[in-house]
Length: 342
Image (cartoon, rainbow, N blue to C red; front, side, top):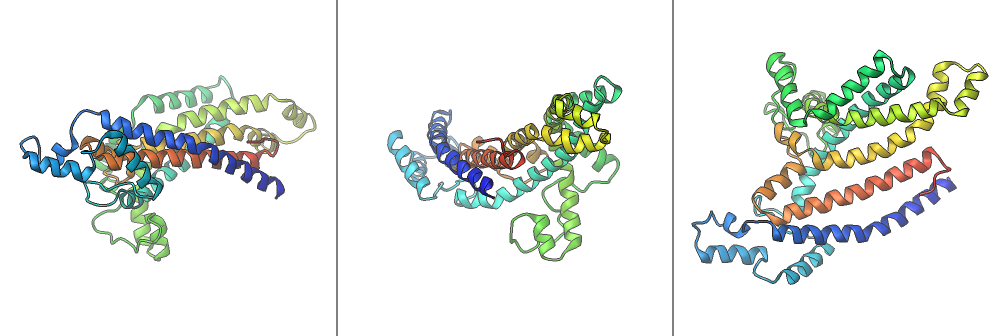
């Protein structure tokens, strides 16, 4: 327990040291949005044929009539108060839009990561146990295909096979079909909310709607997880403690699970944290293919319409998630191996 407390304390220090990086992300994103081509005031004033007065009203509403340094100071002041601005697309506060959409992205990303881990770790272990065999080459080929095929292509192929040809998947348009009533929103995660409401039919409908986009995302991230598992297992299986365990007559699977895999799992934890952060911010293609109402598709729509506030809020959210996930990985790393100090 003492070691766990020390790990958490060190993680807290790491978090404090990450604050300057978050500040840099804030400033960089703000300046980047200001140098992008296009005038958002013209876009939201109904196009280039809008009158000058209407455009000026929009510019004043967005704060674009002030010098850039003053805009930056005002933006940093608002962020410090928890105000990320207002989206001109939705007419709502960016914090509310992100809060409403983040559970959808988290539910999709966590499910995809779970599918990827459940698939990749056994594949990596099997490949490491029989290096150079047909199984090893098959796993490596599968990983190569997963990386080479873009997510929108694999998503369309899965829709074509499981929805159009086989009819096993529901209509790939959103988190729930139009015939299912939404449960009371308690967590924002539909599957959890359905369970809390005691609606098993609704839970099954949400699960069927989720599994295809989650599988699409998982196919793309199985490769790095399986590769790092295979490489770590090969190193672990060739170590002295595994040879000693074999020499005393321990069973093969006992050695693999208790000794080899336990030591090989540490790099997998690190890669899983990086993969999760990447998936959460880069799943925009999957969200677009499946009409999934997540934060990535929300940010893309805002970027295409030059709506500054949602894009800035999204980048800040992703940077914060990246920091938190890395701190969580550090804590798990310390728990898995108390010799590791973060």
